[in-house]
Amino acid sequence: ELWQAGAADVYIKRHFPNLVNSAKLIHDVDLSLVHTNFFVDYPKLVAPNTKYVGGMNLREGRPLEGKFREFVDGAEKGVVLFSLGYTGKPKNVPGFLVAAFIEAFAKLEQRVIMRLDPSLVEVVPENVLVVPWFPQHDLLAHPKTVLFVTHCGMTGILEAVYHSVPMLAMPIFHDQPDNAARLVERGLALKVDRSGLCVVPWMQISWISHYPRHTLTEREVTKAMRELLDN
Image 1: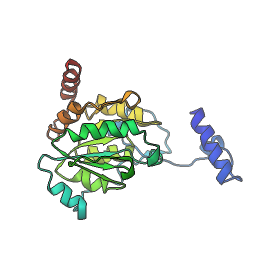
Image 2: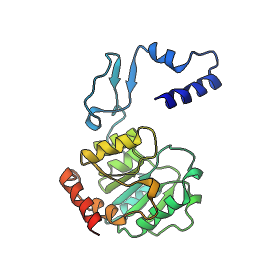
Image 3: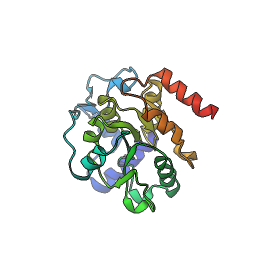
Image 4: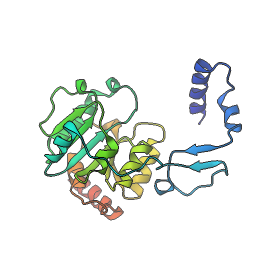
């Protein structure tokens, strides 16, 4: 909390030099709109002026267009989505991490859409489409989407839960590790640790992508983990 306040004060001083510091701002707030939902959070006490609005952006999916429609329509075994959200500049994504996921995705029978700077991928497998942007909400809503590999930003989490898409969590920083822990506890996701990621457990991706929607429970999560550990 102290680190976040310090970082906030740096930006305030740089861009709004006449504004008071973050501590003063917090005490003067009349209303706080929080981008989360109790479905993916723990019960907790909140101030009367704090309102959870996570999910206000949710809607039914729109038809895919162009290359996305063509790529998804041809996916007989389903589609896996990969996105790290806006967790920094694409060029800052470690090369070993990109290589690890590319190696794992190449072994899948599903097609994979990666939201990533295409220049970071030297060799793109036939079943992988690398794009700098994709219509995430509409892809998650598509019935052929079987898995979402995510950094655990709250927007993507709520969209995936709303459309019943299991997740493979790879948190980066800030609230993401806590988000991932809650998803795993609720049986909505499995988790990989990016800090020690040299080879992505493609069996884990393959296993979770075969499960139909609405069936990923704590029992299945435990089964997957034991299967990975035993192998």
